[in-house]
Each structure stands twice: as C-alpha cells, then as structure tokens.
Image 1 (cartoon, rainbow, N blue to C red):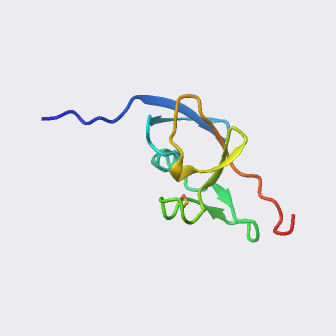
Image 2: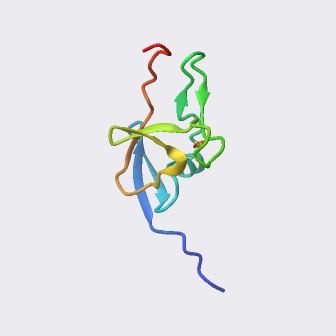
Length: 93
Ligand code: FES
C-alpha cells in the first residue's frame, strides 16, 4: 500500500488562536477542518460569512494575512502564518 503524501504538520494562527494543518492545505480548508466556519462578517447585516465556492470566485473567504487581503481558499497555510478577520469598512467608505 502506498503512503499518502499529506505534508508536514504546521501551526498557524487565526485571530490569535493557534491551529494545526498540513502544509499545502488552503487556509480555508485548514480552518474548516478545525471547525471554524465564520471567516468574516457581511458589511450590511453583520452576518457570518465563510468559504463557499473554494475556487476564488465568490470572495466570501476574504481574510488578512501579513497586512494583505487574500482569499483563504487560494492561500496555502504555512508554519507561523498569522491570519485575521478583515475589518470591514462601510459601503461608502
Ligand atoms: S470560497 Fe469563494 S473565493 Fe474563496
């Protein structure tokens, strides 16, 4: 039987809390596997939003990594990565 190549285990942070994942997983998949569903809030209703399309189209998984807005489904998790929620601005800001 062939060994699955699952990547090494890495630790990363989301909102200051430590999580573990396999290197190469997307941030969205890693957080989902850890039970995190809400990645941000909708600007109008302040409702939790999370991953939806997983292919970079819907923008629902927008998060901050190293001061940049990135899509969690298109960003690979790595050791020490610090991820946080996007501070939503008003619709006319
Ligand atoms: S889940 Fe749709 S862009 Fe990431």
